[in-house]
Image (cartoon, rainbow, N blue to C red; front, side):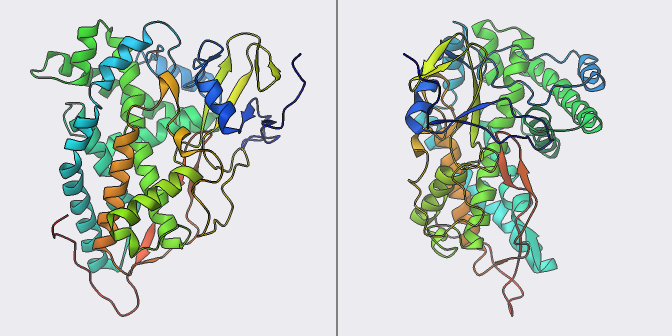
Length: 404
């Protein structure tokens, strides 16, 4: 007999940030999270990319005017076509491919750290999100997929706007502003798809076309992949840099200049407050979880790491001695099962290399703003800025250009 409640299942906070009632049943226990992820026939991913805040008429019309359409293709696909499509995309994220990107990642990381050094020398302060964390992941993602590296500032803006549109709580006026940005991104992406399919050589969209995907399906897949494939890595790097400089990591800023130190800091953040702390599923039919009956249509929020929204394990003032293993297992941070994040190894490699190069190039820097504004959406979190300054008495720094 199914029981009525379980200590592993808990209602989300009574109100969402916009003052509405939260519609999600939160699953926190790592084993039950894993169970949900490994039962896609019972717990469908169909709601994974649905806007958290229903879009109002003006926003919908702004999207409809450009033919905006996001049919389920990868992350939200619960049909038999998912496996074949995933195999095509996975071909761009093989272990050998990711490992071969490390020298390029290091090159981009050193260039970015050098930019931060230069601005510190000129002004005495810099924002590590803008100078260090923002652009290397975007360049890496485009190059890895065989796509042209261009319009990076627009891509970053579109990514942040789309995250807010689909996972935030924007009011009507803000929705319209974000929808116009999403429409602009979609038009750009549609041109990119057409150009890529006709281009020589191997690239993601040409491979997907060869698999039989329609242009609308390729745009749908590309829309979220070009956001998730780089913006979530930027956010992971941003949080790691902030926690290191705040003193809330298992190593200090000096130690982060080593491979082991940087990796430890990144894995700590992944376990305690990942940039993707929650993800959604919906009960496809009446089913059960952990002895609890789950009615069909129940919206489920899986807690992957600590976060503010579900009241998860991230403390308001994290202890520098907190263990990375506390709370959800690090094995679930990138999901599990047939929808596990294809870029998991790439994201962790990028974050570790970029954090290490920043710490090596910028010794002794201090936080300028200890309470920055944070991105706090349902499934994304990170500081918007990591503003730093030189230590007292130091007027300039030098970028690390030595052997890695």
